[in-house]
Length: 596
Image (cartoon, rainbow, N blue to C red; front, side, top):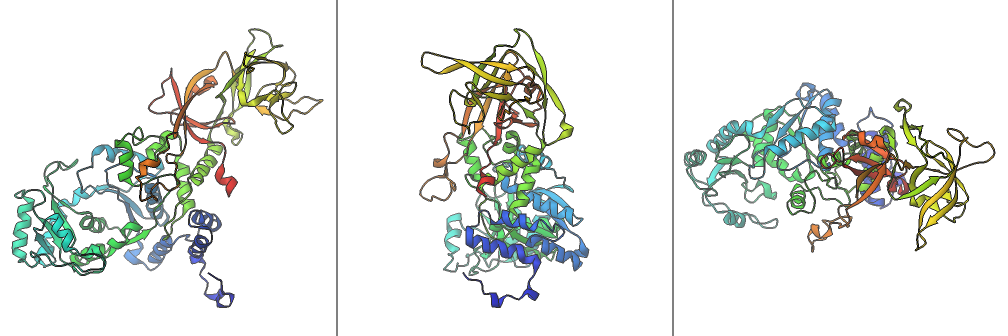
């Protein structure tokens, strides 16, 4: 690839397309993983200018007064699992576009396949979208339209555009042909419309066994798009539906339901991920044949993450086979899992905005998501102190039994967060990693014969240490400079600052530490092995922490920073007032910012 400067026409250059041009170039030069994020950052200087091709399209439609300038979107999840980070991208896009253009966004449940759908998933989806910060214009269900869809199917039969077929599943598959070979017509394709209509109504009344007959659209068995080769519109399936019970022994297919549902709701812009691109001609065919409101489908690249799978089917496998605890396991990429882990909704929205909307499939580094979470929490989270690997410190010149309440800052990034009181006494704990008997000048923590400041308290000096028979340091004997509370010594500089907890007042807590759920960057890339073979056996480890007492009063939904360690929140399921359990949301170390 080479750039021909002579061919560049500055007068013809379209700034609105610059983002897409830059993404394509960066994809070629550096790979697709991070180009979208980089471009979004560059383009963010002009928020009033549409920054992606979908917003440009909607803006053009509004300017042209298409649909009288009205904008209506929808988010249409199937209630057969929990929402995940990929859904968050679609949610943000649909709801934000509606808001930006003064329109509406519906939440519609695509509940046409009762086999794995239930109300648990419906309620979880409602909760996730609310948590993410969005409100829908109305809640709809595809099952609301079953009656209308049935009537429209009858209309297509009578117009000669649909027929009842009796081929078995295997026969239909063999008749369908392949990408390189045309299919062949079913022997039932040309049956009279009145006969097909009679059979279809008998299917509706429950006369036939499951799988005995289907209703198919009559399009073209030689069509180059396999989705147009007489697709199935209805199948017989006697299954209890979570909303309509046993009222329907037949259920419409997704392809026959989706476009018509959009049309019934007056959806002007039906935004789907790229896997539905090949379904768009069928979407348009049904709408055209029925001569109903012409909703328009547009596709965008879905969100993929390294060390993650986002397929709902594969996430269900992780749950059902016991690789994780549940759909809301904090290691899962589900929104409920991220909420339980302590991810703030604002960080999810910001991440989706940074990744951007493109037509080019790409995989974002999970470190970018963690970087976004860390940025948000740095501004919003309170600071607390906890010690993970305790080393006892006795302050030799501190009076026995005397306890002082020292003042600590709650959040240095937010003056309005105020301060808190922490008990300080003769015995405290610090991290074992914060002490060395001997170390060079780069070690800014506590060394034997040297000083360090305790966060929010005094400067201490290590005078001596006690060891066990193996030579391991078990206790430090330190002196306190009693004139250094809230101020520096006048005659020397003390550079290091470490955290601590009072040995008398510390509260014990279990801490759950999470690593990547999959050891492989792209766990679905190896076609020879099952993705579960790459589940990281060390994705969850547990430790014990000694915490300052205020952490026992931390609200479950609030994430805080354990100073110098990371961000943590109480586990919403496991933690009890007398048995605290913290989840590590994200570590302090930011590999994304460093690598960038």
